[in-house]
Length: 456
Image (cartoon, rainbow, N blue to C red; front, side, top):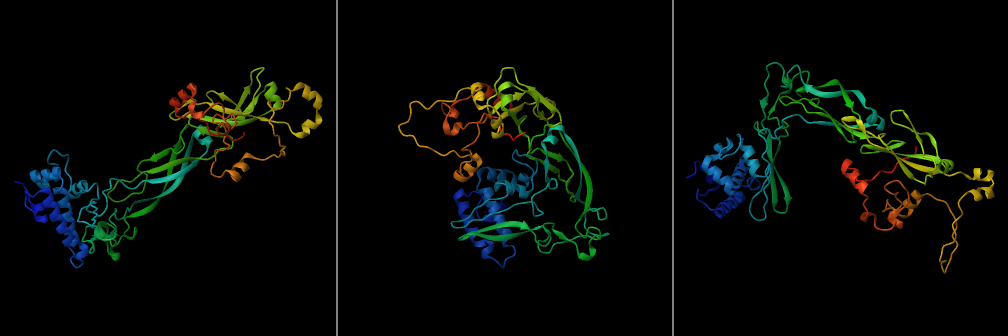
């Protein structure tokens, strides 16, 4: 025999009723006592919710067994091997899938929201405040300390968060009878109604109101006042983009609730000379045709900390267009381990001489020094058409002719130029995996790909 029969009595069934009998009884009761059909009964919503909760518990074999053995009070204390005590709303919310559930006859839908007794979800702390904060690549490379003035809500020091002056006490809200919530009914479809709880519009979910003449003069009954504060954040070396710096407890205060956090979300601004890829940096540097053929030894670029980086090409090395070199240990510092740095990849772009230079040199002597020109194609095509030579920009071609394919003229992922995706390089790119590249992907999550760099 169950220790408690109240839920069975709500549905009008015996304690030995089958699941089919419980379901049929609930459908009949729900259709009869639905608040939409009983607009003049102020208790209709409460009765309807109680029946829905009873059905959800009794229709589930495990929850019904726990109820039969321990009753609602025993379940609330954690009976049946459960954990710590729960209040009734928590029990209902569990069976309704965390604050929502349903049941009912054909063509009907009933939605429920079993929040806390104050009309909203239980809050263990105040709301967090997220602030986007722009940083430069120099900030992330060198580190930076930032101080700023902020404004936040703090509990009123005069009324100590009560909102009332002197010994005045808040009065129970007449509309919600102190519960902080009221039932609302919403049509969600043909012959389908949803009933749910919402914060009371009169007391804003507080369950109580303060008469205007009894409100605190400082906070005007709002319980909190604005206060200016000065906060400091540390941008550490190597922090990643979108990193979140959390100032615990620095958020707005509310009576009876620990304050939330202030969270600064870092957003890295584009840089004119460098791009970042994890712990590595990438840059493009122009060299002259003479340097490409005869070698160079000079400062190629200025680093993010102001240092000049001198590089000398090995004797006898010929630099090809868009050739990439790597400067080990000149990348970004590793977050929390700034002594460990990634690498700096430099794409060498060859700056060709202009027509003015060509007009000043002996063309025949130059032709004798340079490699010979390429010969005609062999075998010669049967039909040969003449095409006009006209210079243009790849970006213009992409924007005009290929708006849906932004990667039509994309560079090789390793910065070597060319367009393997269109013209091929001996096979499908996806079929070829470099072993060193695969190791790098495992180590630093870059996937072997390097973003396109901007000119130095």
